[in-house]
Image (cartoon, rainbow, N blue to C red; front, side):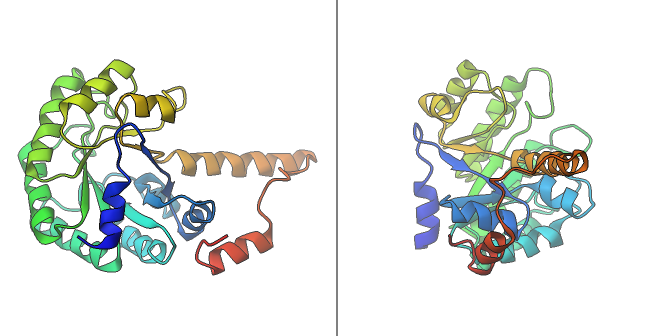
Length: 265
């Protein structure tokens, strides 16, 4: 395992979770690197929406790869959301993962949710994980199961067998977005022999509380992208009505310096 891969694995500590912010372009990644985040992920919604495409339909493989090329130049560890691998061919998924790893990417998210609101056949997801693991053994595979995210009935009964199967196939971590009930989070952390990743959610348990439940990684997902959109609209509205914008905004020179320096403050 490379030093960078080992460093990323080591950041996943149950009880002391890694806060993984998710970037959608070079500037957002550079801003996150500049304030000291050791690792940055990507957000598939942010990448898709920024490019005028829908999320979750395997439409952004090229955009995602280009973003990865930019983010690996920053002084952070980079993990990439590849939706369901942009293919249902396990060998193609493994090939794409290998190309990302060759850039210096240390991890991927691989999900089982489908665009029609259903879950993929777990055997197919297992085959993808096994193919990636065989092709790129050092890559941190974060297997995501979407039973809660898709609002399906009996999500625990759906998610737990999948999480265990993905772990047996070689997943390094398990991501269960949408779950926020403390008792269920603890159950998942105890029942799956892998670092548990959950999603930061407004109104949900804070980072420290999730750590006490055994969580090893907390992702922001599309939250930062959506917050940036809201902030842009608020600022435009403030200018329209004659209110000064937020004085804490980075200056033109700040952004120039940050992006030109590769995210270093």
